[in-house]
Length: 300
Ligand SMILES: [Fe+2]
Image 1 (cartoon, rainbow, N blue to C red):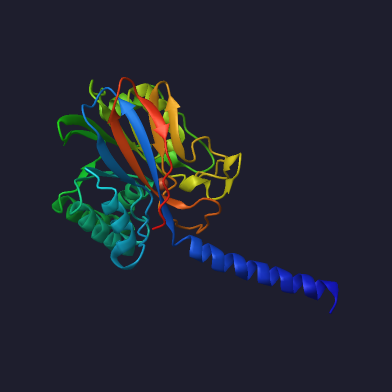
Image 2: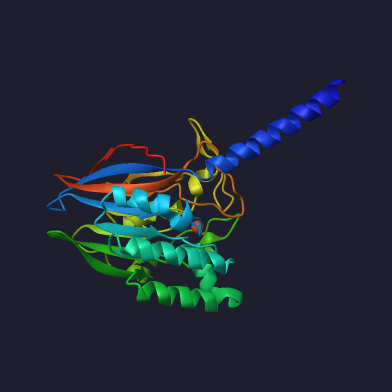
């Protein structure tokens, strides 16, 4: 057997092995726990955040994901956008089933991602999306589309806002700057109490902190698809190489921004060293907002 044939057999074997491993990896997720200490709450609270599920289901009826959410015993469940794939109305049905089950665990508040915004604006699917949206609201899911709500958590009341930026802020190949004042135009002034913000696109993390959100929850970047140890995520959905905010909890101007690596995929079904994650935040009473980052991995 000559060298080229051996190299060809090796190449095919390596490609097949990668496909089998990647398929296995895409069916797994972990739970990432963060803790933030703040003087703006009187008691401890647990919040679970789902981002970028994109209609994916971990087991029948998303049973594995729902079991992991239940284990966190959340008082509040937040959706940081892209629960669906805009061009695939079948993902809307799966997302709705997931919302229905989540609502039985804790109150659910839903901030929109670019897939929801695009679905609402595409004539081919906008009717399906409107049905999905109405069905979600009928379940009692609160959709925050450039709106804010006061949310009671035990003895505390926190302010929660959901930002929907125009789709021009998601264009591929260029990053439009977010001028000062745009967030105030969309959301008004932040509250004086603890202000939480659902803002799908982490590219504007600095602007969210500057607006005054104490803790912002983002997704969108899917961890950068491939995570290179010591460097970070490879590429964002807007085709920016090595996005600054790919995952994790960041401190910006004394505020926190938590970026989920997301739970699903679409278009490029790739996750290398970048396992999907469910985010759980413990808000603890303390003198100042300071984060104690903890990882607790539970395979779902
Ligand atoms: Fe997104």
